[in-house]
Length: 96
Image (cartoon, rainbow, N blue to C red; front, top):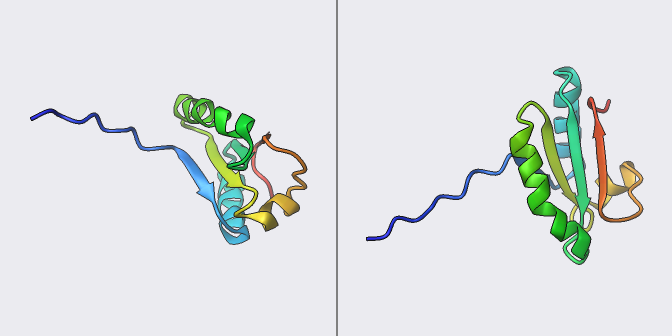
C-alpha cells in the first residue's frame, strides 16, 4: 500500500465576512502581531499565481497573521479597506 503525502496545513486564514475581518484584525492589534493580507479573486490570474508564494511566506513568518480575502465573496471587507484592484497586498502591525 502506497503512503500518501499529507499536505501541510495552511497558515493562511480565509476571511469571508466583515465580522471575521474585525475579529482577526482586532486580535492582531491586541497582540501587536504583524498582519499580511492578500486581496484576491478567482478570475484574476495574477492573484491565483500569487497564492503559493503567499502560502510560502505564511510558513516562513509564523509570528505574522496571514489573511486572504476573496473580494467577490467578502465585498464589504474589500470596500472597507478601499481595495480597487487585484491582487492587492497590505501589511501592517494590525488595524483598529
